[in-house]
Image 1: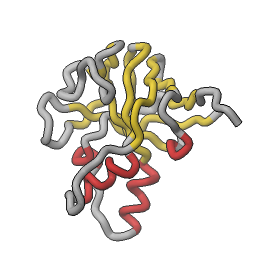
Image 2: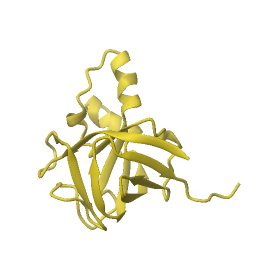
Image 3: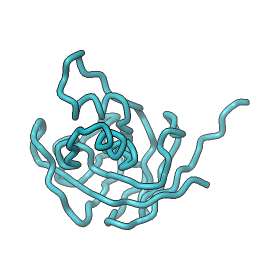
Image 4: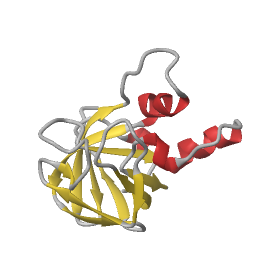
Amino acid sequence: MNRGRVIHLATSDNRGVPKIAVNRIELLPNWGVKGDAHAGEWDRQVSLLEVERLEELEKKGIDVQPDHLAANILVKGADLSKVRSGDELRIGNARIRVSQIGKFYPPGSPWHKEVLSRFGIFGKVVVGGEVKVDDPVILIVEQRAK
């Protein structure tokens, strides 16, 4: 079982602006992060990134500020590179079903959009609950044909 932990949470009530760091969020079933501009009845209710990907960029001299990335949940140690659509992540007592890996941005987009296009994980909330910094993140892999 693949485990990690939440190291940063952020939300914003407007799209297109940096998210604001918070210590906890409430995930609402079939809706997303309570009060977040991306919540709603669609496939990208919640966004996640791995801190390890940001650390790779920092080693290349790119100054990374997590709140500018538009991700709700930043995790460490969960190896989200193994995640596929249909898999679920248990975060605290909530569950998110992965609906999309990456997001299209046109060539020449700012670096922070390139991060989401390559490494962003998007999902729908299937079980709601509170998520806090330091909560465990557990990858639940959908059974795949071998």
